Figure (tube, rainbow, N blue to C red):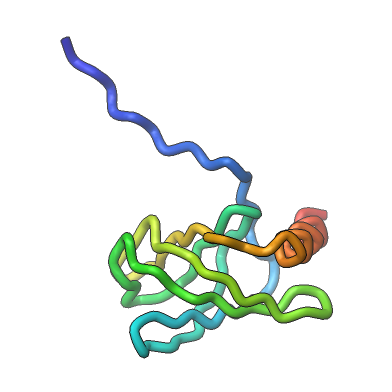
Length: 108
């Protein structure tokens, strides 16, 4: 009997980021700024030619309306030459509300 592979399903929908939106990310003494291409309440896809491998933990820093958000994330998908999909981890409710407001602006 063959089983089909389990498909990854997002808990939150991602939307294209309609503006140049920059995110600072840090890991193991490495600090870089990348453009966010898509974003959602659960994470984002960042453009970078040399992303860290899947499973790497990062600190993300970015601006939401009137507030800087700093949160932890883990690389879920790493594509050399293209970028990385990151999942937010342990985000404060206040920061999640800020991201929600930002996503509503972008989704109009």
